[in-house]
Image 1: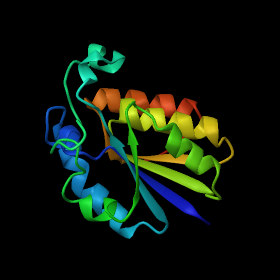
Image 2: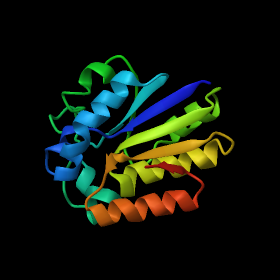
Image 3: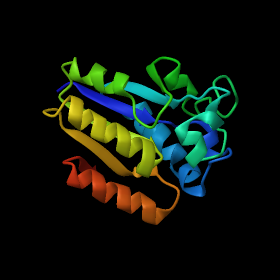
Image 4: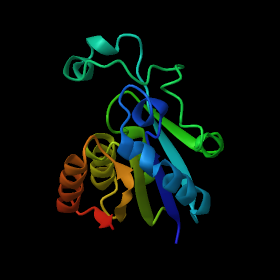
Length: 170
């Protein structure tokens, strides 16, 4: 079976930086171990904003400049960087990557797994896009390898994805 692992936005700003959380910090080692042992292809998404971020709709609703291209906060966390340097990376200016979804839709992957941050925004958006672009490809999210702003928002996002026929692995 041809499998794909999508590591969502494991970037400094979301782990230890301006939007970091203790939950994101707590999953980093386990995410790294999972990536290291994954039997299949691995890709990464990378939240990527320009200097005009505050003028965007997202910037107006989340007025915290983050993941500015080329900044320390934009970079993949050090533990995962060696793996990202060998993988395809989908830079995305918004929550979900249509480029990633198109990539999967045009492939022969038989299963896609998502892990990373933030469960309630970027993991959720990418999972739903994958289901829309490649509806016959099973998509799963590993709950313990994702983190959100709060444990409650994490659980809410997992429930929403399950409603959209994303398999939640606990």
